[in-house]
Image (tube, rainbow, N blue to C red):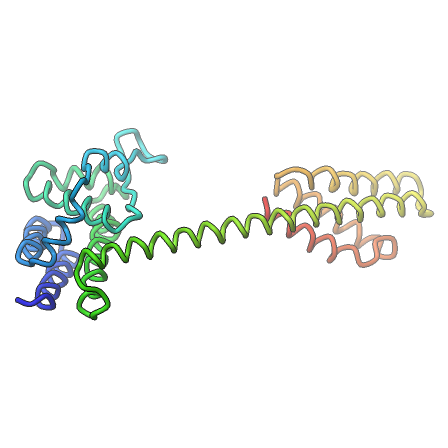
Length: 270
């Protein structure tokens, strides 16, 4: 078989595995592994991935305790690098095929959903097997399209692409955070100025002292909570401020929209 036929066979066996019922999983895993063993290109690809790969350390890294279930339950963390993904999932499938790892036990521990084998198996297929098959397909198609010379080169390029994508994502997140902080600081400064002006207007108004005290309480409460990270408190204080502005439209002329927009910057940054 040529490389294209080898890939087609792998994809076919992968799709059969993905679409299979739990009861047929063992034979589908065998067929998938056979499709890899019968392909020189795939054997070279997986040999490269498995070189210097520490399976025991990988299990500690990618099969972790669940943060929201009982102590005997865990979860699967998808490896970021294509090389680690292929090596790790391949090793898992080899263990299941060799009966050193029982699929039922593996699903019950790391892909526990609602207690049903059906749900756990679906999670296993979607979270572990599909990414595995799709990654192999993507790498091999790069070779077949003539973009690269061999599967190992494709693997290296994919690793580089993912690293660049991750770095760009982290850079954008950092930029967004800095912009958010900047908007937060500027909005906080403007809010404090507005509330100070409100307090001065209340003091100079012709309202009786009881009404002044009530309005000052509302303005001061909003001024206090904007320095916190309590979104509920901020929303509660603004609600009081909103109705105070509605009740005294002249005193708080055009205040509602201005204060609300500034508060959005604060809430988005929290």
